Image (cartoon, rainbow, N blue to C red):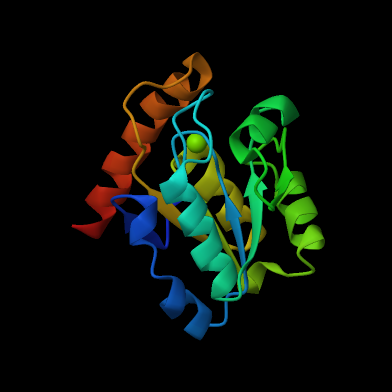
Length: 165
Ligand SMILES: [Mg+2]
């Protein structure tokens, strides 16, 4: 189950310890959109999310949005904010992560992945050798596909937590 295990668990994305990650040598962050920093499918980059992205950039992070959703959805989230993205990323497969790291001219050992799903965001991060940080989803309601992932995820969580006992 270690392939699903996040390196850190956050209550919400703003709990991310940006300075500490920079101190530990990370310079790139790949961020999921739906239910990580925006309401699924409809949420745009609100003030809180925009401040978060700016704080990351100010701290020296290269920020890339990494979403399994389509280009239209990701652009709707980003609006006029200056941030690069990879859409239709096919997480947990490595391709999207590799494309995003190429955009940032970075490598897995310097890359943080932030997302709300073990089965996609965190699994892919671990497969690529990135530092996966799990954040609790913003709202309970998921898309159908995500809801299926969640059921599996609940089983994985039980196993992970059991291993830690
Ligand atoms: Mg998500």
